[in-house]
Amino acid sequence: MKSEINYNYPSVADLRNRAKSKIPKFAFEYLDGGCYDDVNLKKNTERIRDIELKPKYLVDYKAPSLKTELFGHIYDAPFGISPIGLQGLMWPKSPEILAKAAFDHNIPFVLSTVTTASIERISEITEGKAWFQLYHPAEESVTKDILKRAEVAECPVLVILADVPSFGYRPRDIRNGLSMPPKMTLKNIINALKRPHWSLQTIIHGQPSFEILKPYMPKKLNLGQLAKFMDATFSGRLNEEKIKKIRDLWKGKLVLKGAESVQDIETACQLGLDGVIVSNHGGRQVDVGQATIDSINTIAPLYKDKITLMMDSGIRGGADVARVMSTGIDFSFMGRTFMYGVSALGKKGGNHTISMLKTQLIQIMEQLSCSRVTDIYKNKV
Image 1 (cartoon, helix red, strand yellow):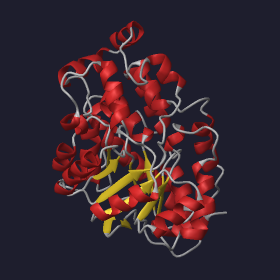
Image 2 (cartoon, helix red, strand yellow; image 1 turned 90 degrees about the horizontal axis):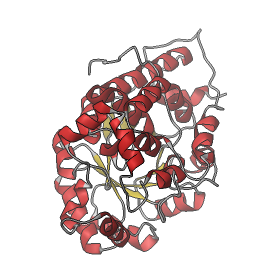
Image 3 (cartoon, helix red, strand yellow; image 1 turned 60 degrees about the vertical axis):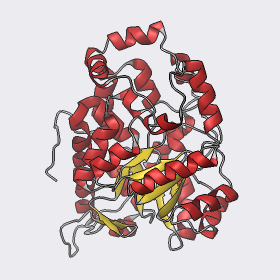
Image 4 (tube, helix red, strand yellow; image 1 turned 30 degrees about the vertical axis):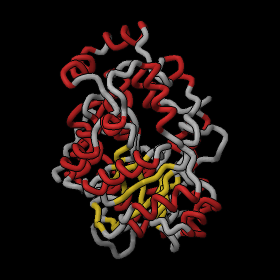
């Protein structure tokens, strides 16, 4: 894939600033914020950046390759795009934009149950290579139907979410009317009018909706009814019994996302899961826990060779990818980073962000004299 970097925005911080100026305040704060006082949101990245790597120069060295094998597929980089809810709110058609960019660059794209594109549409864009993340439905019939759709769409990996037993307490979203039920306040309308490009694109592409859930939703729900539907439809707390049922139903690779404790990782191994994404939901669910990298530093030495270990939360750029890969994990994921890119640059944002991250990571590997991503593990101070 040809690099498509816009050198006016050579960093994630540049993309974030541009995104803030392009999309309405309520959409940016939904993307950018965490829960409660943002303690874990900030700590996630700060603790990653405490990791130091040791450059080596006077050694035999081959040009670096970012290729990384994961679940039998060789990807072109050791990072993928995390599942994100309500993506079309932040920028119209953003799941489609990111799915296409991920496919073109041969990295994983994970589709959320509560985003704004359908399983079928994303499968068409990615030729059946997109992963799917399941928010656990309360009704077993809905679970079976969604999994059947994912199977028909040829999703190779199913991700089940552990860290949403309740929705995060997010003061910004509450103030902006983006809690359940969502509402468009006069303040939000004024903010939208201040962002004419976003408003025009939203008019052209239509109001975002929960496309995956449409077959299960009564017609013409008002906002209050939508809230009741969401509460009745989802049972966020996973347990062993629910996971066993999903493991029996799903014949592809099965990954648990959101686990941070040794106990949960051990249970995942015992239940025959194929992988774990260690995550605290980007600091959006719990503000009293530890940074995800600290969880990884405990978990990786114990389970590195027992189950595929991946991580998201707090990773912002190529240097951060190098830092987290130095812990010995197999793969990394980012969410906000890619949404900053799309919100900043629209349909070019996905390709730009992936190209930029690849360039950054290759530069780090050249400084470390690492020919393969797995070599980074040897350079941790």
